[in-house]
Image 1 (cartoon, rainbow, N blue to C red):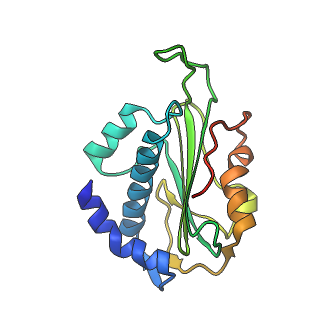
Image 2 (cartoon, rainbow, N blue to C red; image 1 turned 90 degrees about the vertical axis):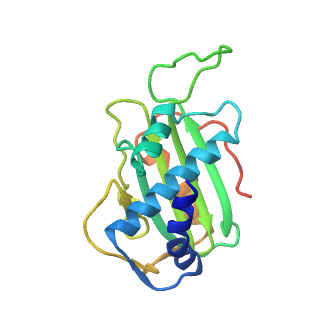
Length: 190
């Protein structure tokens, strides 16, 4: 994945600094892949909160793009608290599978990443029939980049989220998707 990091660096640098650019469909795919990889990596640092299956990790390795069940969006932010932060949730939506050690496995996750002027949100589930999309409350604030959508994405955006808005995305967006559960294992932003 070091090749991914090198390819994503110029795009991320511009997003983080708030520099002007138009994200092509290839740029958005690359950025979505980087966000998915980063969410997968972040999950490995939390004991017992795994919701991303090995099959998703294998997909990323084999196809160099996020799995099809993932939903990824970006936003512009203006927040000291979120200048460098990662916030991860894990939840159970479906029938609880038991994993070794008697723990109940999670099947859904959301990772919110703040870097400079940039916010990335990656959501995934293994629960069949669940689809994620942007709530009406987020129109104009968050821009879907995966699954791929048509149209231009111009950076920086016209509108920026401040701390309260980013907190809402990190803590409340999952509930707006109809997820009927309390998120577990909340990690505070760094």
